[in-house]
Each structure stands twice: as C-alpha cells, then as structure tokens.
Image 1 (cartoon, chains in turn blue, yellow, red):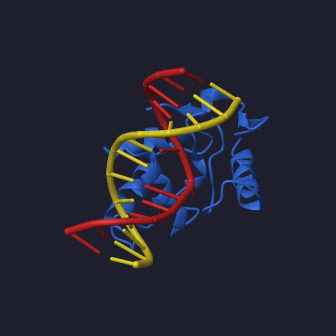
Image 2 (tube, rainbow, N blue to C red):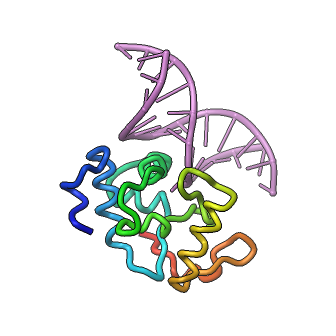
Length: 112
DNA sequence: TGTGGCGCGTAAT
DNA sequence: ATTACGCGCCACA
C-alpha cells in the first residue's frame, strides 16, 4: 500500500479505517466493532460504510473484516450472493474457512 | 432466535 | 441545517 493517509481516500475517516486494517495480517480476521474501537469510533456500521467503496483493493484487506457473531458480513456493498462468495474465496486462500455460515476457527479472530 | 433501538459518518435533500 | 441510510451491534424478551 502506497500510503493510506495521503492517497485520495474518499474521507479522512476512511483513511483511518484503512490504516488500521493494514495492521491485520493475512490468515486472521477482525470484527467491524473491534476495528471501530481501534480508531476510537463507537459505530461498527460506520466502518462497513467506509469499506463499502474499497478504493484500493487488495492493499486494504477489507475481506478480513467480519461480523461480531462470526458471520462473514458483507462485501462490495452486498451481504449475499456472488460478492460474498468472492470474499469467502479470498479468505479461504489465506486459510480462513467458514463452516455452516460461521467462522470455523475463532482462534483466527483478533478480538481487540 | 427474533426484534427494536442505538450509534456515527456520508450522501442527499 | 436536516433527513435518510448503511459490509453492524447490543440488550432484552
């Protein structure tokens, strides 16, 4: 990633989200809520809204962000369908799998 | 498990 | 300045 702060990240808020996401290694996932907390925001929903557009994929691994209930969450603005399937594919490629719609190995989840 | 209300940034009005 | 909306989340029944 060139630099999440300087590029034309639609908004300064989004820039902070991307910067925080950069610190999530492959093979691991984080929650919308946890990611929000990391940047001092109390609304997980705002995070999803920021990731929706996803300016520079795959530098910013927005696919490593899942819901609190260990459900995949959404991708490219959708919570179902092919978009979500693509998200699961990316995660599977990193060793992260889902069983019956839920994260298979919670050990891969960063809770803070 | 299902539902309602809440939180907060953004785009539209 | 206001309103409406969204890759959610938590409390409560």
